[in-house]
Length: 182
Image 1 (cartoon, rainbow, N blue to C red):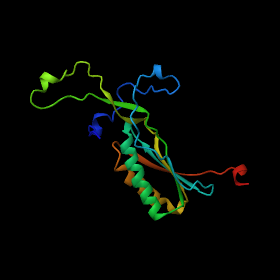
Image 2: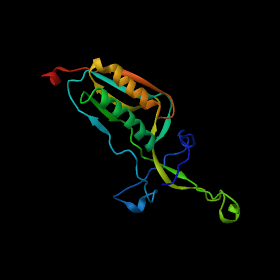
Image 3: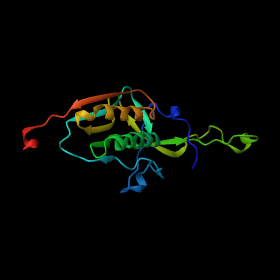
Image 4: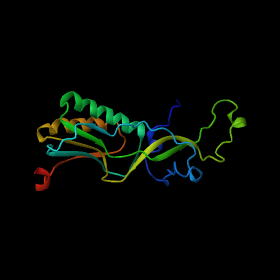
């Protein structure tokens, strides 16, 4: 597999989204060949109604995250949660990578100026997928009991180290209505 450029080249969502891919109307696709996403699992753990706490990892600034970085953060957090509080959490990936990242592959080395077209027609070919997130938007959500709060927060702190940008961890109590408790 080709090596991708560093995340800093595509982490700011300053250009328009380029994501039109349709299975029903393939002639109307702007993206001819959609790259595969690294992120395949979105829900982990046990979904239980008895959880009383919800912890989210929220962005502080608008950012664009590649699918492989979200997958790396998901694996780190899930492994930590599974080893410390097995079957006592519900972990959800809230962001979906839909934006197609393009790269213009230029030839380098001796005589590359004779082979390559340079930057003319430098639209690029699809390389990977990314999720576009606004400020205060959740990347991950973990539900658990309040006695597991330090473990859940530490798992999300580990996940933060795999993602570019700045994030906050928000813990909220889950409110139960009378209809759901009965």
